[in-house]
Amino acid sequence: MAKGNAKGQKGKKITLKIAKNSIRVAFDGGLRLDLSKMGITTFPKCILKLTDVDELDLSRNMLKKIPSSIENFQKLRWLDLHSNQLEELPKSIGKLQNLFYLNICNNKLTTKNLPEELNLLKNLHILNLGLNCLESIPTSLGALKELREIGLFDNALTTIPNSVKKLPKLKKLNTERNPFPDSTKQEEQTDSIKRIETLYLAEEKDLCYSCLKKCQDERDKLKKLNNMTPSPSKKPSFSLLLTPNSVAMDNQEEWRLSSKHS
Image 1 (cartoon, one colour):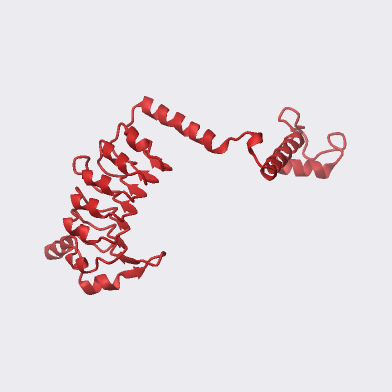
Image 2 (cartoon, helix red, strand yellow; image 1 turned 90 degrees about the horizontal axis):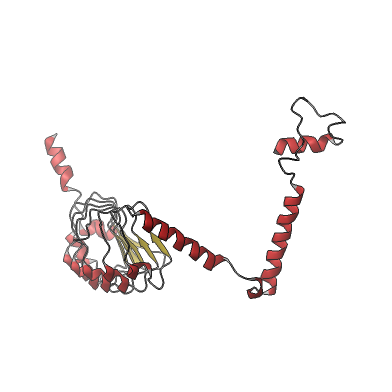
């Protein structure tokens, strides 16, 4: 029994043949090497012979370390390392200049072991750092001007650097379940309201004819609906009647329908 447990801790051995059989064609036509959920405990060196892939998925394994040789995957646009046991990332990750997507969520990364070289990933659009042990975010991430989405949820953050919050192309910043001070939470709520007003409110003079007419038609429908719906104070009540009579309401069918929907 003890022997079986020891074998389980070693994890599955990935051979070059297994790795080659795990290559698929991605949606955009590139090559995707999917080694997720394989029980891997150490980075399989054999995949260094497959560095021409565009996507590499090592998620949901038991990896504690990614070697510096990850820089050999120069074509890599998509790297998924989420749900492992990573405590650090190699500095060489900053050499993956074509990287578009990086998911390192649900690991054991600390601020100290987050390499500053992440700020070299100039083409990065999506970065997920959620579910780690981060107490702060490096201001240097503000250099990633192409970032559209950042996941920072479920960490130990008390503040977000302005250099990150004000990234020019940022559309989504998930900071849920962090121990922010109340003042910070209130500030973020206010900022969210401002963004909503900016995105969705417009004056009539700024709308084209077709858009304006559509809005007016919808507004007229809403007004008509509100006028037809009786207010709670005016709604007839027949609490003592089992069925309506002619005195209570002339149209029994109308009474039945209104009662059904009330």
